[in-house]
Length: 339
Image 1 (cartoon, rainbow, N blue to C red):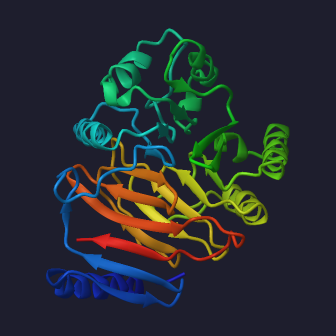
Image 2 (spheres, rainbow, N blue to C red):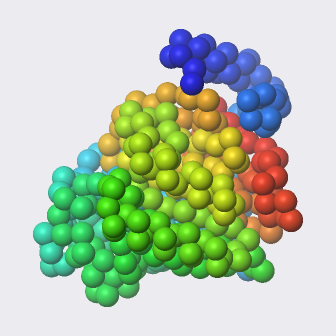
Image 3 (cartoon, rainbow, N blue to C red):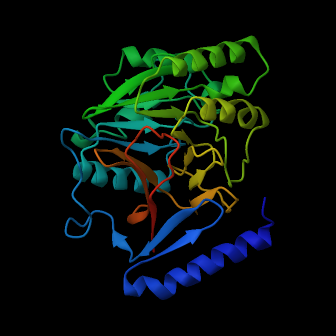
């Protein structure tokens, strides 16, 4: 792992190069550590229809808004949800994903807790949010009645947490996308429940024939954020991701926006900046990192799997992974950094 001074110098060099070349349009250069291309381009307003490419709400595409750690009423959350609302009106996503810590500080008291309304139903109460919200449990959620969040699935048309861990399938044209949602709070423990969940996870992955395999859990397996990687998460999940060709792991917990790429090729999305912020740094695996309120947008179409990061005003970064071929471990074609 790089020392802080090395990390700072590396990022300073990239920012300086981008500031020089951005007025000219864009430039590609190779980052040897991950053999990838970074594209530096002019900054863009996120929802200016004359600049942002037309979204792919059509047969053959699937898109999902991804945000975590939204469970506290802050000005940052208000701004993030408003930005998501504008994006959803433009992109018309098929679904959304909440990455845990849905209710600070200690979850909900029961299925009748009024915070289900204030921190979910009313918070996302516009037509563009009339979509399924897949939900996982965060560490603050299990401080209360975690089972109430599971049971709320039977009461809400949009809230989707049928169990503490579950699998669902989406489609993008003729492509299939399996989403595996984990309870990483249990995986932090050396327990029979953790072993049972990992057996379930491996069994479900082994039967998946999906073109894309996406995993969701609150705690990151790779991060440059302040929380760092929990020892058990970093030990038990990455080998399974590699064995079963997982494409992307989505998590929150760190209150920032990050994209990292493991040595094995799977991607780590951190999108935990839905209501609070903490600082973040660049580590060896980092492709993008910013401590800013915001969210991530996943798009799968006939060409690629695309991950775009937004703050409350504009698109910050996009990374494209080419359409799945026989070589699922093929490297990404390009990434875009918008300044």
